Length: 288
Length: 333
Image (cartoon, rainbow over all chains, first blue to last red; front, side):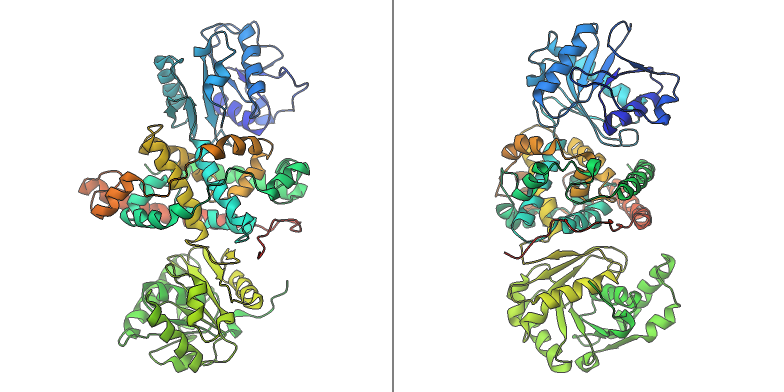
């Protein structure tokens, strides 16, 4: 079963349907009314069933849930699912920055709740972050990882300590980018160009640790001696980002974000990125 | 902003024809410029010409050339004599990272060429604001930093020093677009390049998470390669956040920023590697270890990947948006 809405949820549905699972999609969330229409590519699967309530489905092994980054929403989602699901059904919920133990707190069976993070578009990326803690069964986590690796086309990694790491790495990048802009060195576009034209040329091959080895490793240590003391340690969100949010900016969804997008821009970028995503997956799968 | 000048009418110079200098000469030739290359060290010209020809063949194989190789070579002049720079609008310095030598080069450039010449340095070690004090005309001095191979990557960092005039910065920024580059424009000097600072911020967090035992080398590489590596060739971090939707990011930042590492020292494992001068796949010792065969395998795979990723990236150039009015720009404070 998959519970959630939005682009990420659609990708998860596609990923699980392509893997051959029978997938029930829970449309009615605790707080939301009608969900959005789904793309034809999902609806055409015989093994796809939209449902209004999580009740009366026998043999469910896994519920994948996607909510906003909000503890209350996550707790409500878990409570809602627990009402109807058999105790042996795992609940795998997304969480970038909220510790798993906090989400487990209100659950009747905390050990069935684990963290599961995806990378959009979930139907093509290899990314899968599994977050567990001492409440979870090691065997169940291992089984899930095996399933994701063998069935879903993922190459998962597991955290055993209650929190994920993807958000930390991204936040480290964002914090430094914010600081460079806030202090007048560069603009948003400059940061994006720097990302695309440097790391964009090696990250699909290897993560940064392997990349250092490919480039000769030791010099990076000497640069760290110079740079680490100068990197941003900020804990605040810069005014220019606060302002975008205060003005209702939601990013591409409503055309207002760090950039402005027309409907046509949005369509172009989304279509082009979907095509890119398939190509980059093909490319990545050629290399170790 | 209008920029009407054709590159074939702008003579440019390169001083220093080592590996990087030769590669930059080729990038400028391919962009359509007539190029004057000065070899400050005696006997360098022949080797440079061979390298340039070889790079041009590489360009031809990569479908970067619109004309036969000979017509590019016709627009190239190489010499040990600075006088060939006499009509240059822009001269790129690309010599060793020693201040005294660079100062001498700047002096010779200005003696040889027109009054309104702009001089740029490819330095990655010395702050531009410091270097420009060595130049006779600091307001027309700035940093243009290339990545290797200069004719193939879209990477370029343009850096204004404290004394660089706005006109100089804008002129070079506009010109760089006709080189098929996507320049990052730094309004003022900062230690390390923008790309370096962004990635070293990630490195710092990576080693912190490993030192704390939260994760290990393999998994942290998976996390970053499979997340960022799945989109970063296509878009930068801000476009990515726009794409995903901004609503959750303030909360994620508020939860995560205070937990991020503030380490000012070198992570232990990197200190050991630096002390031992371990060279990764080159000597089998790095963050991971490699047998001779494994190292060779990684090297070959990475070389093959490089060709693939250039081809793929080329298919997805950054396209201008219809409305650019409200893009956040860094301003000179």
